[in-house]
Length: 513
Image (cartoon, rainbow, N blue to C red):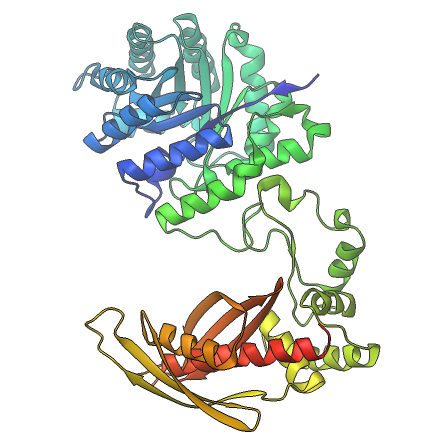
């Protein structure tokens, strides 16, 4: 029988503790809205007592986000601050439709002796006192035994049993420092399940860190034991090497439902969007080979893989890109790619070539791919246009003159001289800037009905006299055509790119494309 596993998202609390991942109140709220769309069960919005900013973020999220449970972290009672953390958490969570106070206390000998400087008996009493206090404000209490995986098991059983007895509804067993090994964690959770007499009265949760690269594996191995909650973060961000990755945990449970006999309430089609939003907010990019959401997660470069992928996507993909909100997988063309993938890409680009032309183009492509890490669509188009089809310069840029002032809007004007067949013509184009003015002049001189879809500028050489490259995409009749041009003047490079695209478009028309 399938069980539902709750997803406790701590991106806004443990995740934010990752160096470089600090978020403003507004950014936390935006992320919380997306987490609600994603369908997580609990959002740990922060640590209310940590700062006024965290308190405000939790309070605003509690006011605005209604479906998930909103949680705040809080330390247990101590001699210096008393119940301050619990009171701060309660105040911040007051507007929440569903709220949880998440109490934590270190239980390992090393933490008790060197950080807290208290005995096991004192820690036990502090936990009990704090849970009873928190119960005054909500019935949803989570207790975490920090550094549980380095804690004496007998003591851990005792404090968990007492925590449940006085009101904790969720018991979290964190691998705080990413120390435990996978089978070791399995045996530990199994021991607790069998030796804490009232363990069935609470939801057992796991919270794993990735210091040894085992966070996801350690979390998943406990599912068959009956745990009911997994704590994780989007993109696996978090302290040091990060937390268990939400997307990995969720997609493992979905892809291998036959094995785990468990599911989550996460809308997986929102995973990619959530990952990209977090990247945009924090500025921390996802590594290309990151499972599920990395740029290469659904990319195939090896020829054998590409051939199998084209025959049936299930040959080399255990999940569909669409499952996580990615439109489609990608065949990356490089030196390992085979004919089948290359021919498929040529067809996607709109070319109809003979077998002889395809073979010649493929050999030229392989020679280029040996020199480049990745061959792009523009490279393939250049091979076909220049070496296979031999695109003539139907339109040529002869000259370009800039006029106007940079300090006055709409005052930029550019005179463009084009050679159209055997005729040379000039036109003074005007626009919001010199590039816009140049494009306007070229469009009028050529009479094109195409639309400019994309415009991108890149430096291709360093220094003051660096050469810039402009790439454009134009569209006409549902067909997209790329063009490129380079020059020390970006305006000239842009004009060259536009003319290059128009030449390609005209050649396509003449070939019946």
